Amino acid sequence: MVQIVIDLDNLEDTIERIYEQYYLDVYKFLVSFTGNQSDAEDLTQDVFIRVLKSLPKFNEHYKLKTWVLSIAKHTAIDHFRKKKFYSLFEDNFFKQLLSKEKQPDEIAENLEKRTEINTALTTLKPQYRMVFILRGVNEYSIKETAEIMDWSEAKVKVTYHRALKKLKEELMGKSKGVLENANC
Image 1 (cartoon, rainbow, N blue to C red):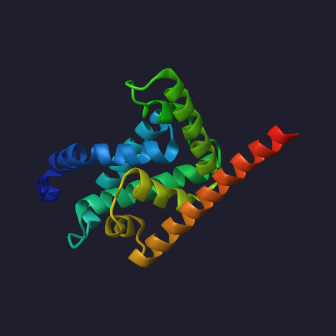
Image 2: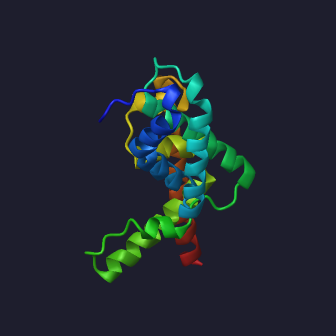
C-alpha cells in the first residue's frame, strides 16, 4: 500500500490518489450497508465529496483509510436516516455472491438462506448492522472497526456479539415459525 502524502496546494492530485486507493473499500462497505449498487455508487461519490471538503481538517495522527471509512460510515448513517427503514438489503446483492459452479438446487437453497439472512439483517439496529457488515462481511479487525466507528475495541466486541445474537434469534424465530406453520 502506497502512503499518500496530503498536499493541500495540489488538492486535485491528492484527492485523485485518495480516491484510487480507497474507492473499492468505500464502495464495498456502502453496497453491504445499502444492499443497492445504485445507492452505493451515489453514496460513494458523496463520501469523496465530503473527503475533499474535509481534507484541510484531516489530522495526520489518524490513518487515512480509517478516516475515509469513518466518513463513509457517517454518510451511510445519513442515508439510513433519510430512507427511514426501507429495504436496506435487496436480493440483487446476495445473488451476486452466488458461485456459478454450484448445482441449481444448491444455488436455490443458498439463495433462500441468503434471503432469510437479508430479512433478518433488516431487523437489526443500524449500529448492529454496521458492526456486522464491518466485522462479519468485510472482515475488518476489531481495531479497524473501532477506529471506523469511533468506538472502543470493547464496545465493538460487545456490539458485534449482540448483533450476532440478535441475528441468530431472528433466524431461529423464523425457522421455528415455519415449523409451526407446517404442523398446522
